[in-house]
Length: 349
Image (tube, rainbow, N blue to C red; front, side, top):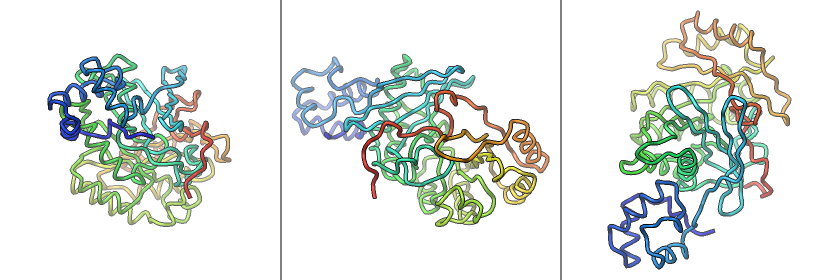
């Protein structure tokens, strides 16, 4: 597999083009074309000779959409093909406030959460920053967007993979996607979801990128959380809460806890009371999710009535909480349903 040109920022492209014997202004033409979601070969401002030199070293199309599934609610799920033949997925969701794209940071995942389809095949490999960015660029272009008038206005790093398990490339992506002169999505319109890798939360807090930190919590006691989230064996809830407090201190951004409601597991009155006791008074929000069932797992969702009852208990107890609207579940595009279902590569040990 060749290098990914979209890994580079504008300053790095300027260095590259001059090393290749081109004028510095060519970097801006190249950068503009890439930010428009174009293949190298389709950037008309560049000479054929220069493009040929680039294509000797860099992938022409690191990420391309090979199939689109459309939900009854208008949500779109994409299968993206990578240059090495691996497949990842992403989702495009329309809301009144704008359009949100759910993007992947890894091919597969090694976290092993029992409610998530993305981890079924294990971790195949990390995505590069440029591959992650290309997911956004091709979808923005698909919907007629430009860097100046984006159709993708919000991002959630909640597709396949654990973003903080691919820390360096995720941070590089975040710097590139928020950079002035590029597609320039505000960090405040980006949410990063993690299962709670505590040391990396501290590192993220120090990066100066004020995005929305979202933690997959799903239970209030470590021993119960371990049943569905193996990462709980390494990082305790108390440690996660301390890391979140540090994140708030450094960024001023309140943090969000994702809480999937699993029948018989975490959604009775006792759990609501424990969640209130754990989180009340903290600068956080609880995002309740009715479990989107995965056919390979035996976990079941609670009823809609029970979900609203749980929400009412939290609100009565003084917590800021909402129940997420279920969208995209009929195309396997809802939270927890993204999977590497087309992969044949062996997982990383």
